Length: 129
Image 1 (cartoon, one colour):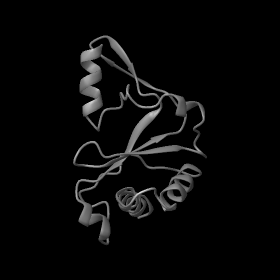
Image 2 (tube, one colour; image 1 turned 180 degrees about the vertical axis):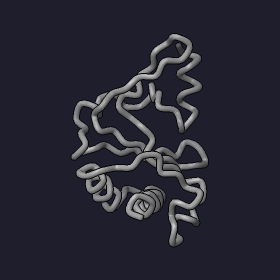
Image 3 (spheres, one colour; image 1 turned 135 degrees about the vertical axis):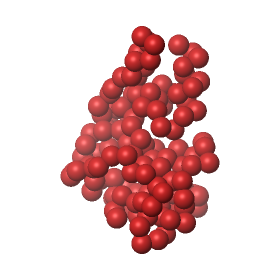
């Protein structure tokens, strides 16, 4: 199983996030989701946890996602400042209320650093477009 941990922790598009915080699934819900901005690759990604834990089976081995699923990813940061912020920047899920409002509200809050604020604003524009 360790060999798959390495692969899954390096790919931002996999639902099997064995290294991500499992405890947040217990306190996350559709009306109070947890968010994570991952910047460990050159393409930042936004992850969401609404408290629903899932699994993925690979070669008969089962992995957990700890409730985390990818919400959006930025491949072209300048496009996030354009009239169509999703151009070349995929949004992988269509959120419904109350989750959409909760995510937009969280992304609108001031962030802890300049870089994090920049990514929060970019994802805010993508999801509120």
